[in-house]
Image 1 (tube, helix red, strand yellow):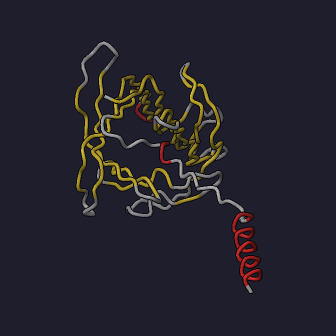
Image 2 (cartoon, rainbow, N blue to C red):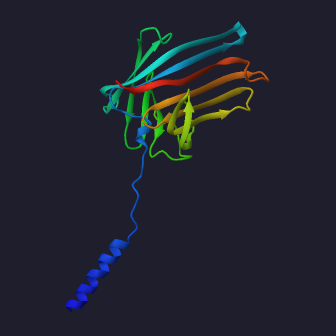
Image 3 (cartoon, rainbow, N blue to C red):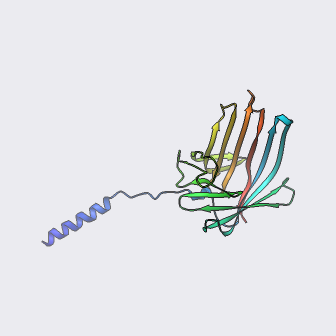
Amino acid sequence: MKILKITILLSILLLVSCKKKTTPIDFHYEYFPMEQGTFVIYDVQDIIHDDAVNVHDTSNYQLKTVIGQDYIDNQGRTAKEFLRYTRPNSSAPWQFSDLWTAYRDADRLEIIEENERIIRLVFAVSNNKMWNPNAYNSMNDEEFYYDDLNITKIINGQSFEKTVVVEEKDETDNKIHFQRRFEVYAEGVGLVRRHYKDFTNVFADTLQPLKGFEQYYTVVSYGVE
């Protein structure tokens, strides 16, 4: 009997030791760091088109975003202040622009932009994962998805070891409503590039829209204050 018990015990230990070890899921939360003082500075270009009144105006400026203090949002949740500052060029002082809110939980990152709650990222980050960014606002449903997960990219002369692309809209063959929108996030930094084109009534050459808006963010520097 004693030998039998020892045999059973050894068998159990052998089975336990042979079990496949599970790899913990990497949710990639660091694609949007939430540490207070985390900042990113961008060169921004805005272009407004309205051919009917002969307007094709370009504005160039810098934008700085900073993760601020804890903030109780309109859902009663503990979020973070998402402070935004602008200046006309790198030599000018920063001027406070507006206060947004950033909320990140186990499943998603929400940014409250001009009172609109937008889901910018979902977790765990994985290739071709899809979501509706407007699930919690009154805007039309859309479909965002990830692409190029953990790819090294060089942006504005800076190398980012792990990045992911959020594909937002790719309707470049539509001459009535041309749209091309995507964002790039870098691990440990956050948003590092934004590409936004939304045109109506586009000429055969898509560089000549009759009406629409373009916006481009390009990372300049980042860190923790």
